[in-house]
View (tube, helix red, strand yellow):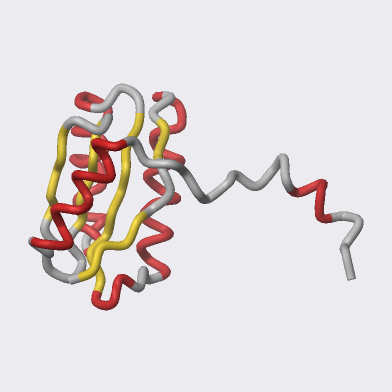
Length: 120
């Protein structure tokens, strides 16, 4: 049965799907051939620069300020966060990392794309 109140949430909840630019897709394809370790993170900045940070997904709180500084000084338009996990199954903490990153960059107007999973 259709819920008559469903439509009211469509304007509030952001869409969690996005179309990647060709450069972004190509960059992520590299990691299918050369996978990283569980918990490693790839940050793709404006589709042009790639940052690989070992273990960031499991040590976000310790590295948070440095990563945010790097992103705000090197990204202008959009950031893609990809987390390497066994079986490409994201953990709850990976989504929390994405939410914190998104909230922290909101004032900078840098778009944080939905978190992606990479298989290790």
